[in-house]
Length: 379
Ligand code: SF4
Image (cartoon, rainbow, N blue to C red; front, top):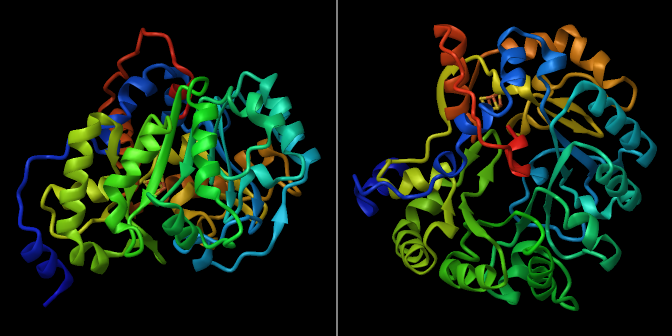
C-alpha cells in the first residue's frame, strides 16, 4: 500500500479544520500592513531597502545537545563561529539598512554558546532592531537573563514531556537534567518576553508524550506549544511515521487542545494531516518569492535566501566574513535568487501568495493603523 493510501485509510478525512495552524496564528497581512515601506521596496525590487529580517546563525555545529532530529545532521558542516567583532559590525550595517528584526540562532548550534554572546546581546539592547531567538533552553546563565528577557520572542526546542525522553531526543549525558533547566528557563522568561513558545518535533520516541508535554511546558509558563513534523533531507517530512501514528497524534492533540485551547498550535503540515489531507504537502507549483526579498539567512558558511534553503549551494549568495551586507545585497546573485521560482510550501507560503497578488494586481496593501508589537517586526 502506498504511504498516502496508508494515511488515508488510517486517517480518513475530511475533518473539521484544526483551529490553529501557523498561518492563522500569525496574521501576516496585519503585520505587513505595519511596515508598508518594506513591502513597497520589495515590490519595486529595491533589495537594500526591503531587507527586514535577518536570520543570524552566530555559530555552526557548536551545541551542548545532539538532537536526533536536527536538520544540520543531513548536511556536511564544519565547526565555526562568526566572530564577535564581525557580529558587532553587522549590527551597525543592519541598522544603516533599516533592518527591523534579527533572529538569533545557530546552524546545528546553540546561540547562547557563542563566546561573545554577552557583548552581542548588550549591543542589541541599544539597537532599535527587535530580537528573537531559537534556543534549547538548557544554558541561560543568570547574567544573561535580563538581556534575553528583553527579546520580542523566544522559541525553545523541547520535544518531550519527561526528562528521560528529553534526554533521548536531545542526546546528552545522563548526568544532566536539562529538562528541568528548560522549565526553569521558561519560568524566568515568561513574564518579560511577550511571546515564548516551545516546539515539539513529533517522533517515535515522544509520540506518547504529546499531552504530557503540553501540560508540563504550558504550566511552566510557555505561552504556546507548537507540534511539528520531523524534516528529512531535500525538504521532505517523515510521512511514514505520521501515517503509522496518525490516530494517536490526533487523539493526543485533541485532548491537549481541549485542555489548553489556542495555546496548542499546529505547524501547517500537521494541521493538514489532521484536516484529512492524504499526505503533508511540501511541494507546490513554482512561483517567485517576494518574501525572500524581505529576509535572508546569514551564517558562517554563507548567506541564503531563507531557512528552508539554508546550506543549499544553489541558493547561496555572498559571505559576511569577507563582504559587507550592502555589497552582498547589491550583488547580481542576490537579484537573481530573489527572482528564481520556488516550489516549496514553507511557513511563508500564504504570505508569499499575498505579496505576489499585490505585485501582479496592483492592489494596495491595507495599512495597519494599530501600533506595532515587538513581535510584529518579524515580517
Ligand atoms: S517560498 Fe521558497 S524561497 Fe520563499 S521563503 Fe519559502 S522556501 Fe524560501
